[in-house]
Image 1 (cartoon, rainbow, N blue to C red):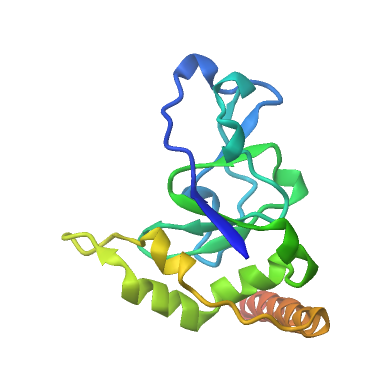
Image 2: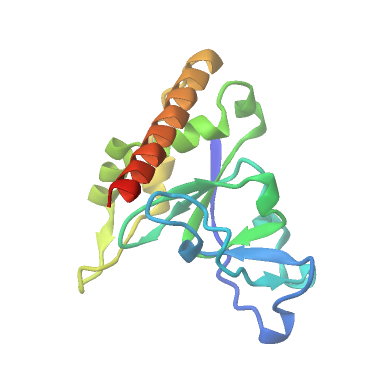
Length: 178
C-alpha cells in the first residue's frame, strides 16, 4: 500500500543553493526527538534544475529517519512544499489506491507508536561507536500495517491530538511552577 524511497544524497554545488522560491532541503536536524518539524531552523533551498523529479515531496508523504541516535517519523504538510528530503530519511508515500482506506496521518501515528519504534531499533544495525544506527528499507517494507475504518482512524487521531494538548498544558504548568 506504500512506496518507499530514499531521500536525496546527490551533492548539490554551492552555486545552486539558496535559490529564492526553490526546493527546501529537509534534513534530520529539522525534526525534534518528538518528530515535530522545527520551522524556525534555516532551510537550504535549491533550484529545480538540480532536483531529481521523483524525489520531490508531496503532502502526506512520511519521512522516516533511517539513521541516527533514534528513529523519528514526520509528515509533509502543504506549508513545507516545495521540498525534497535528505538521505537521512526514507520517504514513505501511500499508493493512489490506498488513499481510499488509509489516512497518511494514521500511518504516521502507526509508525510513531512506541512498539514500532522499539521494533525498528531492534532491527537496526548499530555503528561500532554505539551512538548511531541505521535501518534497512526491508524492515519497513515487510511491516504489516493494520487497516481499520476511517472512523476508527479518526478516533485514534483525535485521541492523539488530545494527548498532545494535555502534554503541552502540563509543560506550561510545570514552567509556571518553576
